[in-house]
Amino acid sequence: MKTRRDFLKALGAGAAALALRRAVPAGAGEQAERHPNIVIINVDDLGYGDVGCYGATKVETPNIDRLAREGCRFVDAHAASAVCTPSRYSLLTGRYAFRANSWGPLNLFAGLIIDPKMLTMPAMLKAHGYATCCIGKWHLGFGRQPTDWNAELTPGPLDVGFDYYYGIPQVNSGPPFVYVENRRVLGLDAKDPFVRGRKPPTTPYPEKNMGPFIGGAKAAHALYKDELIGTTLAEKAVSWLKTHARQKPGDPFFLYLATTNIHHPFTPHPRFKGTSQCGPYGDFIHELDWIVGEVLATLDELKLNDDTLVIFTSDNGGMLNAGGRDAWKAGHRLNGKLLGFKFGAWEGGHRVPFIVRYPGKVKAGSMSDQLIANIDLTATFAAMLGYKLKAGEAPDSFNMLPALTGEAKQPIRDHLIQACYHRRLALRRGKWVYVEGQGSGGFDNGLTGIAFTKQKNSDVTTKGKIRAGAPPNQLYDLEADLTQTTNVHDKHPDVVAEMRALLKGYRGAAGTRPK
Image (cartoon, rainbow, N blue to C red):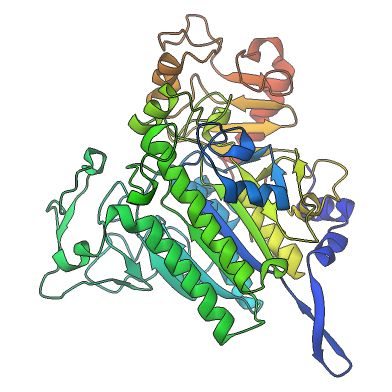
């Protein structure tokens, strides 16, 4: 198997890296490399079909569509996991999360799952002179397990490379329903601490009645208003951008904005309610698009548009929850024509929107069918910086600079692993995708989703049952069958054997890419 170094050499990564940097005067007779600012907008549960530029018709997403018009839209982009926590782990470390035994969402007492000693994307950027900021959903753990929410929350975002953090520590559907700034819960009163096992203040949203629970801390909980989370995070991101531009003009920055949109419960600001054609699910997308617009408008205002690389993507595919089902009934297709939903190994669980804009460097209005994943950003930024990754650093990340600049003449990735909720893996290689086991491996094995949507799959009946005699595993030809209607496992035993052998190597891997 080719190593990352072989791929970079073949694709001329040095030239691509120079295309994404510009020289600026550093002094008389000197030149210094000025790296682009970087903004990653990592959305929660946004499906492949949830925005206009990917085919949505029941929602309007002018700001996200603007990114696509002014940049490159990837049509074969993936999250490295079909679940939030492991997907975010992979994005920030360049490592498959199953290497850290992370398969599903963390509960609120789990400690930080990123080893502060390992290379992370923000730490690498910080070492190269970037100011680094994380705004929004973290969901990668705080402190040592079990997390003590009454104490200083360390280690956390500041210990893996971020200079500043503001956001919600877990997920908007589960406790503790507070904001954290840097290492402390905002508004926490020592006289009114958190109490483990006590139910938090209730809300009108039944989807939030999930444990384990932690109550008390009334003042801290009072700052958390469901319908104001999106606007609050947008305001914080804009404020940080403006403050940085004022205090450190010309210095590069990295903003990682992880929205709670569009994870359930769907609680948009009142100004967005009733604005879409598919209920609260679509209204929450409209608020998301507004958030993107606020960031883009700020870059315009600060005259940073041409100096900033913006990446928009999602942590996994759309979820067929109650709101998703209502949107489906209204004619909205969360993941477009793809089979499956969040948590599962079918394409709908992890193929996601992925848009890159960098004026003058990334061709406006372009489209790429390169196989790419969120896990690739660490190696991509390393190449952009001219940093040579050491052994064990971002071992599963590929440099995608040639794909961003349009210089790639051949596929960069020869394979990609996707993980799903029930500890199952899928392997993509060329046109083939191999899925371990039967069903999707997600909630209810994807079967209730098929029963509801009436999507077609040769292994599953319309009533959501595995057909008698279905193969034990799955193989699909995505060139001929993107919607995965037909499992061809038994027709291609040689392909299955090759895929299983490669996947076995990953199952036993402990930090390095298998040979």
